[in-house]
Length: 299
Length: 299
Image 1 (cartoon, rainbow over the protein chains, first blue to last red):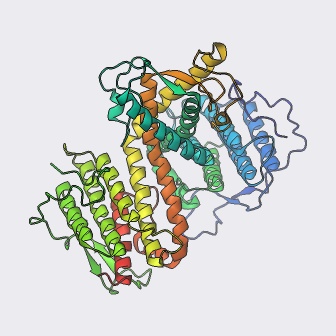
Image 2: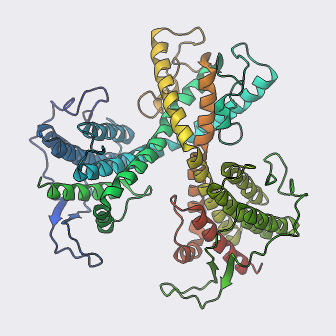
Image 3: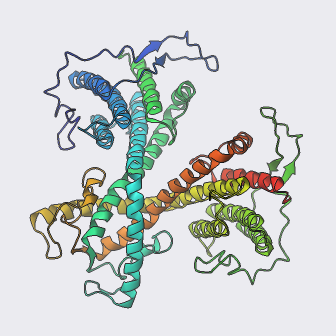
């Protein structure tokens, strides 16, 4: 039974951590360790220390304990940059945990919830200071890039976990809006007012765009409960993909200030893409955070 | 001023083509031509003839004429497979045309409309025969893979062209559903019936999932016109991304029957990804269609 990682309503990651027993936490040394320039990959000359990652797969609980250890480390820090780096590191273990939960489902929590709470943790870390602002240091911007990549692929994964529902709702909703457009042209309901075509209809995107209800943006339309529920769920699920693209683009924009750093990271780890697995994401970001730490002398 | 490529309501690509003047059509020879085994790329041994593509950029009108030429060729054919291959080839020139329209906008038609009509043309070609069925030949399944990749990246491009609207609508709709959930818990409107929680709410995907309106799936909810319009537009735009994933997965599934063919195509052309440009898409599919033709002795 896993305690909630971070309630979206709590005012910070200290929120639900009081009851955690840290005595039986396992060491993290075996999952990855620093590697000097004795790196064996010959196709690039590593100027920064490479981590080597073990392929040992652990239980969700293992990663949860590891994540809490890193999060508590962050909670205890004062320096905002070091704190954010450690929260991001903790978030990676929460992602490992969600990934393990996808392999071995737990009753206590769904992978979707684990990922969405991890999103909250990363957002919290990024709110400590505006690491993406013009006044931010190069190191802070690099951290912002790594966090945005994380958020983008987390939102994408969350979208995929609910995609089948979205497809089902999308079909029903498109059918409903098509019919409601027809009927509204035949017999306007008392809830509708007539007026000029709504701007929405001009950006509807193909057949039936913005065609729900009669033209005019005042007045109201009576829709079935079922449709209202579906629309709410559909908006929530598809919001994940929109957020994913938003954070991907933000990361691309910020990365242009540190091209050399991210080129070396790409050649060390395989560049991230929207097809990257959660494991590839965790390793890429963890390597990046390790370099950020060593450059900021936080090791 | 471009005539519509294909009205979704017409019963086939012959629909709007009667008025087309084919006399001043330009030859296609200069845009790509077949290459023998004298292919210079040493990193793979080409067993199939490679096309070499010129980087010359033409006007939207050039590609439109080229597309019509290929489409008329298809219209004239009897054999369903050869017909579908030629419609697919024509679709590629319509994609080139849409891509040129993105560079140099035309008043007559938006790139979005050009791409969505191209989707209709490919769908028409795929309805000629069920090329994806179990009884389909290997060549027919290869064609189905190429068409599904095309549809997937066309839908993705269409989504990107409208993404900013979707983001705007998504924000407003999430805000609306959040508030409507609050108010519905405080003061149920006369349009709502009480009952058990709707199944939708359990799959809402994070905060506010399926929370629009009161629980219960009967009865109706009065929503503002503005929201009704936005929801219709939002569903239409996000439907593109859902379709894109659907066709991508279908292509992956069907491609497993012709691994060797697609491995050679990938090594000849760079594998397609969701980051591929419209130009990369056109070249990849065109090379694939060329191989299909040569294997079916349609050259």
